[in-house]
Image (tube, rainbow, N blue to C red):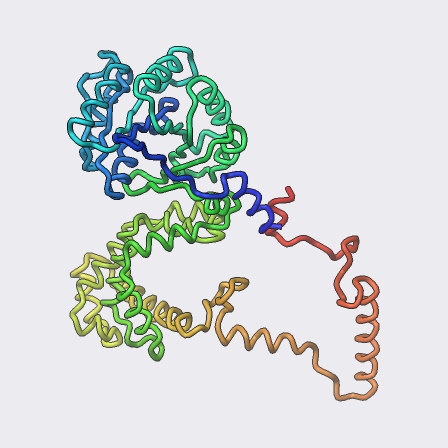
Length: 443
């Protein structure tokens, strides 16, 4: 059921990732439209940064001359993104946005910018003035792409807004902003289905890097709460070098992972930190949607405290933590500004984590995580399961054993009668119950 629902969602969301269309003769003009508060200005900076990384030379154009400080905000965002900005008017109600948009094309040609991103004004709701201004800017610059920016947390009201913009101005693709919120992004499904326009980009955080091309298959996984492992893997690949990863894997594969030291642990932790917020990374794992509150309450500073404890140790202590005794713990605690118990807990957790990671590296599986391929819970768990599978022991008393055999035969006959040769309960039976994963989707 999950597989079928997932495939249908991917199909509705566009099936494949839609790429930007570029003009045959530069500059390519991209116009951003949407309601006020959808995140257009911030998104203009993110898109500019993303395109700059692809080897382009974008120019951000300030055509939102109504909203207070909109021009100033775009200038700041452009500076952070390291891209150029064209803002001849101060804004705050002063200036003609259509003229600014028109002049920006000539400016881009003169300064050899191959991409122009036009940030337009929004309103709190749909009105005729907003639509007319957006249509006038569209006619003045003839954009190659009009992107409709929508807040992923707005819910089903996003559909009405999208329809109004489609009919009033027209757009080629949708950009989802604020995907890092609590909403799973179901609005994406409705917008794609109702407007027939593809979702092209997704923004999922405050940083300039929290932006990427939209992947329908990953969005479907998010809506179904199956996690987003592919994005997590991509982020890891950007941060970790293949050579470093192989080196760590070989250390963990050693006997009980003893070659893996606290120095390695610190290096790994700092690499993970570079990937972004720990709570966001955890949120990409399958099934973590049920632990949203716990993830949101994570204290990101715990990572810094752990790093401080390890950095307060001598090189010898990091290489061989077993030598850390009471007096050493006191010294390390004083140096890192924590309680002695925190040092003791860290060392104990390190040994446990090393043992668990070593077992996983050797193919033993992760303890306490049943039902996931390759994570069967290790040899100890398998032995327990095998022992349990043996069933009730036969009695040594002949009379009692005969009675046990008769009871067993009656049980088998009843099972076969209710569920055929496999001994499975029929769907109409009292014992039949859907697994919890399916109950979510069956209401």
